[in-house]
Image 1: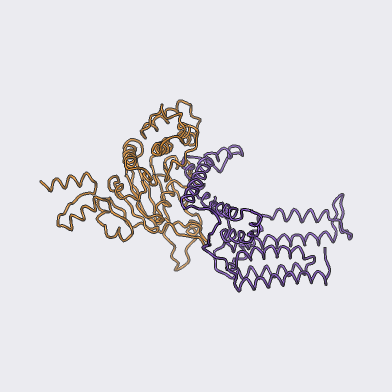
Image 2 (image 1 turned 90 degrees about the vertical axis):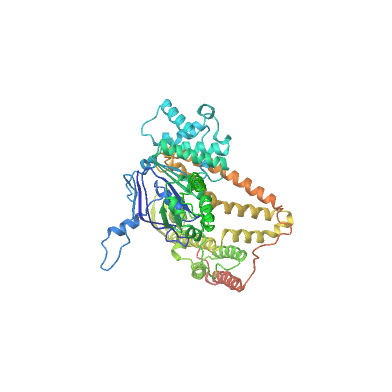
Length: 303
Length: 271
């Protein structure tokens, strides 16, 4: 499913003293099959943007009404807001948002805090049961839950009857992710999937996402602060700052704009830092900023 | 959905009333309520209304916003008015049917009651519009200080109150986040019967409770780590000070009470 946003605006608490503009004229396209990264500061609008993708935040309908009116002479109407995910038109109030949510899985920040059921199996099955039109048989549920738990790297037999609250942090997160992907969404959106995990846990989560990307979900979108995470994993990345999109390009190009990123208060990955330091010393390495590629190019240089 | 529930309806502008001392504002509120109940005729209530209008004008809170606080008790107001209208035993009977009688006194009494309720709600909501919850608890603590003589834990009480108040918006945010997360997993909070809806709340309630406990524990640890021992020898970050605004307020409220009493003595009581 292709995701298209054009001229998307969003204001929190409109027409009150607390009004704050979170998105300003955001235009962005995420092609099917991409492993897309969204980078930005706290408050840059990145979370607001991803919450639009499955209809948790809506395009204000008053804007639409305004557009339906014929413009007066000399009046310039703001450009039309477009937001589509596959066939779903999210600017339309009549869209079936529950159907959309089945196709767009959303993993929030610290998803382990949304666990609630008595057993891991029941928790993972929650979304599955909610989304299915007909009542699923026990075997069907069991099958789907088993597959979901296994793809996130947990042992079904050992886990299914455990309380989700007795697990370790990393395990909880895996269960939470399993609870989202169990419905086989075509697009998987994750807000800071690796936040608060130890280095090994981070690495494992990213490996898991690659596995999901290959086998289950066509498109994966991650929101991240960690530039290394973006450069190592993403095929394309967008930079948000103060509600605007500043860059949309593959990481191999993006991190050449180091100075602009610094001025936005962002960082560049370690690999890009190494390349910069080498360049200042007169050695130019053309790499795509993945560790793998950096090593290869460095070895090639050595001859 | 949750954003519509405005809690702690503080309206952030800078005004005469906003800058008054919260302790005095609390005292004024009590004095004003006393004045409302001292007023036994419409002239007295008129004087109260005049003071309210002045206070609203100097608070720079939009009138519409203040009036909106009536919405919550509209039913109560209408209900009391109707009950009093029908069942007040007056002398000059205008209409009578079975056990319902409407008398002239009943009409007057109902109007009086509605006005009184209106003034009561308006003045208390004006206080919450112009005073932050934190300032309110600060003021309350200071006003309750005499209770310390009988070993009443005033400081602890104020602390509990301010922590509770502080946590309400945090828990609201949390609720919304959890609701969103469960909505993304297909939870449906908006349709279905009563039982179905009550059931739908469980996936929100359990994580919310857990997080409330977690936060309480964290806060307790943080306070312990800083050796927080309560009131002994603590100084305040924001010292409450009386100023000229409070003097004006005091004069106004004192004048109101005197006026209301004089009006009652010289013009007689309507009810």
